[in-house]
Length: 102
Image (cartoon, rainbow, N blue to C red; front, side, top):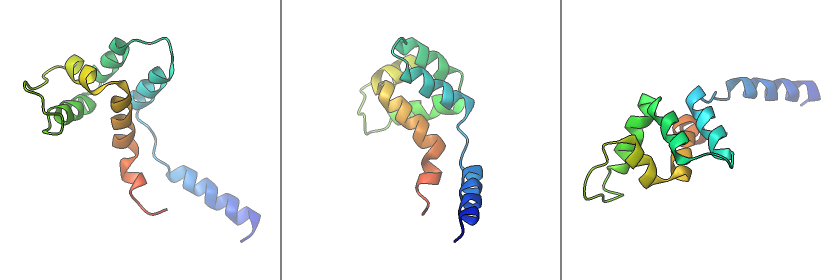
């Protein structure tokens, strides 16, 4: 394979790479900063209805065994923790692409 063909193949693969949603980028960026509060993450999650629904579904699953269901974003994010929320954001965005063969 020539170098130009390889370069073209790499550029095409980059073009097919998934784009992170604006909400996902904001949450990941905020979590990477040392000067943020959990309330900042909660505010971003509140503005993303599909993510809110997913977090509530996950935290209320039998895996976590809550005695009372979490009905607020604050409780869900507090219980899951920041790292888990970021992992869920990444899995939600990239998961379908990571399960396919390279």
